Image (cartoon, rainbow, N blue to C red; front, top):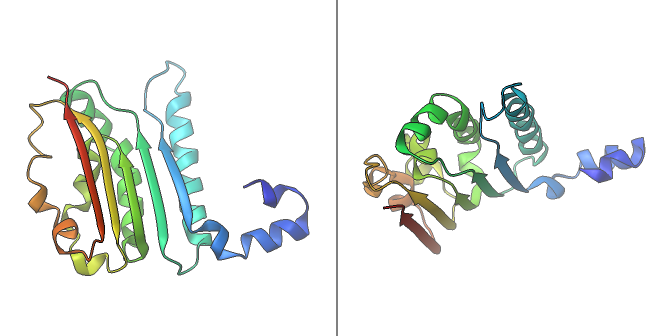
Length: 166
């Protein structure tokens, strides 16, 4: 956040003002895209930055926007999810009780780590949007009822836009 770079006083104020940290956009870089490993390093830095940002938000309700590059096949989502994409989703679980608005632009597989969440785990969740493309053979995402937090939450707005690539 740029306010923290002006001077030490502004940094102190910015880092201590939870309202500035209640919304976050999380662009998840794809791993192993480059030979030099820079994408993996970027992902690690971004994950740590996300955690710090969420800690600074105090106990306030969170608005989360998550964007992960669409995989080109089911096998690619499985490779990515072996640790990389799932690590972002798993890192958000401790904050589930404060999710208010959740926007996801990614493969539905991103939500797999959240399958154990129930409505009681996301008491503040009011808005859920999913914008995705997926391979028609991808079965894991077809049973939305397994996402208990979606069926049990007190949602006031839900928008699912999923499009098959076939």
